[in-house]
Image (cartoon, rainbow, N blue to C red; front, side, top):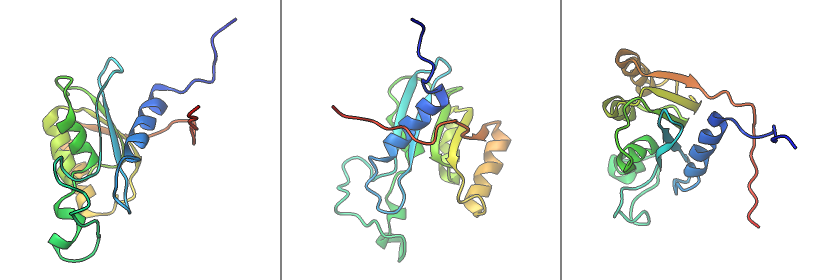
Length: 161
């Protein structure tokens, strides 16, 4: 008997982890996940967008419109920042971040400072915004590469038996 050949690639696996992490987000409009991986193909950390630890997500707004303190934007930690801050595995120098949404300018700063050197992203739906343009400018300056996800599977089903 030979080994099976229909297994998923490393990129498909790690993007799947990022997508699964996004499922933990309680944000009603945008769920984002991040999986940070070392050169040895080991997961260093994961994160999703949500309220900081200790802040009850039932007590904070999830609105997209309104004054700053009436929206989620003043309070939510993005997936990439959560993954960086949640890391307990050691240095992130040279790691790859798999993200479901291209990082904003604030997360780009944290990615650069943490030493992550590559980003594989699923969506770049805000590419035309100033925040994403600033993000790409900083990433380019710092030598952090970013490439769109190019897995060959569109769907992975999980069964709990």
